[in-house]
Every structure is written in structure tokens, then in C-alpha cells.
Length: 225
Image (cartoon, rainbow, N blue to C red; front, side):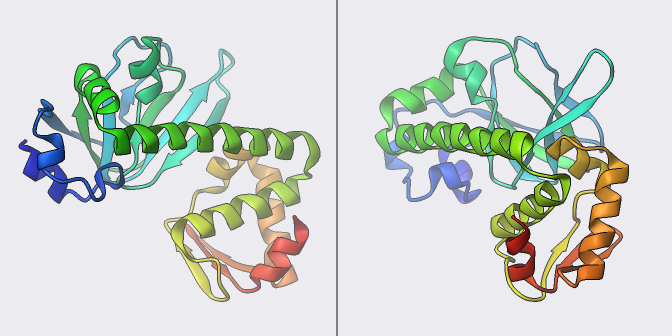
């Protein structure tokens, strides 16, 4: 893949970057296809490549020794991930698994660090991404320790709607996470989430169908939080 090919992918990390800005960087990259529920890398793996999600859906998860699944992130298309291991030479902190068929682009640790060290705009974006992640983890910790399950579900749906630009009356979240996925993301069990979704639908805040949520009253949903 050439630098021009990479820029044509319109990845957010490279927005506004020209081929001339990257002329000094070896950006040889490899594309890989994943089947649904295929693991890209696992917790404690030692590879340190950085990936971009080109299409499909990926989850960053942690499986406890007892088999409990905790979902930390559902990546948006165009997002990059794996940069923590690339930056500190550490092991993978989470596993990444394909929720559906997916395509990813892999850049080696060496090339990623060259980008980080030599392209100021990219360095600032990566640094801001790390700060945003810390803030997000802080907010999630506050929710886990102070919010009820109903509040956590409402907050989760609001956050998902904001990410997709659908926080509006009638905003539809297609390909919505399953109740089990929501539960694994907010520290609850599937039965509690299912009851909460049913309660929110009865209150008129949302309409829920299989893998689809419609925001009937976003203000009512926000009031719960």
C-alpha cells in the first residue's frame, strides 16, 4: 500500500495530512480480513503492531479467569487501536475480537513510532486520544460506583447516540449492541439490562426491537442520568 492509498482511506488520524507530509515515513501496511468472532489479538499477547478498522465491528474485551466478559470499547470504523503496546513495549491489555466480518489495516510498531515522533499533528492527535481515553475511563468508573443499572443503561444509550450523531427525537441506532453486550459494558447482567430496556420502552423514552433502538424522547432518557 502506498502513502496515496493510505490517505485515500480517509482515516481520521490522517485527516488533512498530505502525501508530502509523510514522504519521509515508511508506511508499508497490510490489510487483513476477519471472520465474525475471530480474535485479532488476545490479552497479554506480545505483538505491538497498530491497527485501523476499515469496515465491520470490533470489540475490545477482557475475559476473567472465571469466564466473565467485560467489554471496554466498541470501535468505530476508521478508529486506530493497539497503540498502548506500541508506545510502551508492553503486552496487550485487552483482547480484540470481531463482532462481525471486518477488515483491518496493520502498521508495524516501528512505522507507527516514526509517525508519532516525526509528524506533530499526528502526535497531538494520538496524545489527545490517550487523554480522552483516561477521561472516559474516569467517567465509566464513576458510573459503575454511583449509578443504578437504569442510569448506566440510559448513559450507555446516550453515549452511543452521540457517537453516531443520532441524539435526537426519532434517532435510530441500527445494529445496536445486544443486551448481553450492554451488560458486559456497564457491569450488569443481561437479565437486568433486558428489564431496564423494557422499562425505558414503557416510559416512552425509547422504542426497542431486535438490534435496533429508537430514541423517542432523548430528554427523558437524559433526565434519568
